[in-house]
Image (cartoon, rainbow, N blue to C red):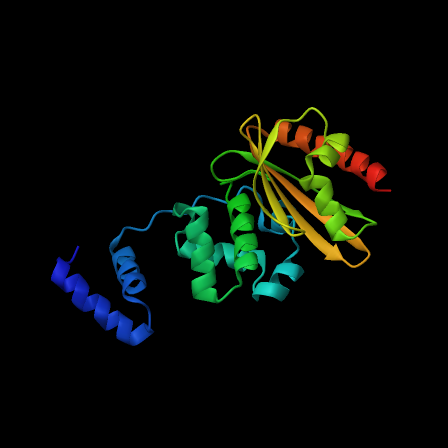
Length: 227
């Protein structure tokens, strides 16, 4: 490992060549000095990448310029399997100029392919349950069905929760009484509106499936109320 003054000199030299910030150039320089770790094998053959990621090669190539097999090779070369989820997404965004949402999608897909997370699972080991539904009402009315406690109790009875943050007709974050959390995002579709729910911090895949069924049932009840 070079001495501190040598690191500074080499970092500034790299900055001039690449246009990188001091922090990025220094990180890249130090990474080169680390011994490379062998990438863990993918959990499925390359022909099954689309199935395990839930996204076709055509779709991911259209938005990012690469199919899944190419992404896996590139990220393995960058030792992405040693990075956190946030670090992988940032690497994809910075190096390949991929938008935030698609950087996240590629990151999640890569993590599933390498066995770093299961479908619906976060890197920390917890699971998410996702459910969405479109209603034949304006978004303001749909939002009120969540924000007004009296209305909410009609389709979501017996649940103790706390709304921790909210943006009217846009989003809401809710803390469940069991320590889990729910994010609700609302989309205006003119005379119709949609809510997309993500129930986070669930302890198992079985519990995630249970909550997904629960939300499917409760959103049907809400539909009956809204008419």
